[in-house]
Image (tube, rainbow, N blue to C red):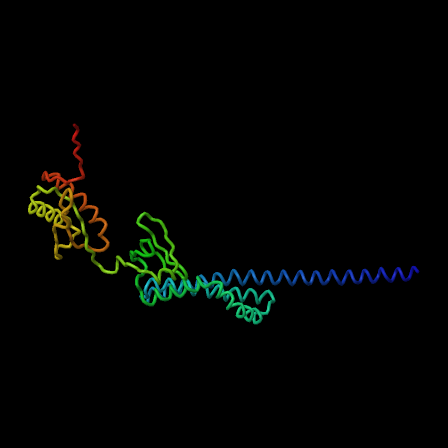
Length: 281
C-alpha cells in the first residue's frame, strides 16, 4: 500500500511541476505580448503624429482649402488609428482575418443603428464638395450664428460673438438654409433713426450723411443712401445705407448708431418716443 501511495505522490509532484511550468510559460507569453502591444502602441502613436504633421504641412504648402484639409486630417487620423488597433489585435494573437469578417458582418447592423452619424458624415462631404461656407466664415443656420471654427467628420463647430461654441450636426446643416454673411468681401450697413414730424428732413439727411462720411471705415466709392422709410404714429423713420468691408460690419453699425444720436442732440433734432396725454376732469 505504501508503494502505491509513494507513486501517487510522485505523480502528483510531476503533474504539479507540469502545471507550474505551463503557467510560467503562459505568463511569460502574456507578458511578452503585452510588451509587444505596448511597444506597438507607443511607436505607432508617435509615427501617426509624425505622419499627420507631414500631411498637414503638405496640405498647407499646396494651398488646400482649410475646411477640406481639416476634414481630411480627421478622416486620415481615424483611419490610421484604426490600422493601429488592428495591428494591436493581431499582436495579441487574435486572427485579424476573422475579426475583419466579423466587422463586415456587423457593418450593416451598425450602419442601420448609426443612420444619424452616417447622415452627418455624408452631410460633411456635401459641405466640402459644394462649399456653402468655409472655416473662418460667419454663418447663420439652424437657428444659430457664429464663425466657423472647424468642419469635422460629423459636426461643424461655430464660435458665437460672445465666444460660445455651438456644435451643429453636418446632416442637419447640409439640409437647412445657410446664410453665409462673409461670402462677399463687402457688406451693406443699414441704420434707421426716428425724427419728429416737425423736423426739417433735408437738414436731418445732411447731418446723417456727414456723420456717415466722417467714419473712416465706410467705403466712400460706394453710394450712401438716405431715405424716408416709415411714416409712423409718433415720428418719421429715416434709414441710411452704406457699404463697408465685411470684417468692419459690426464696428461701423454700432458706431453709426451712437454717432447718429449724438449728431441729432447737437443739432436740436428730437428723436420721438411714444407719449400719452392724460386729461383729468
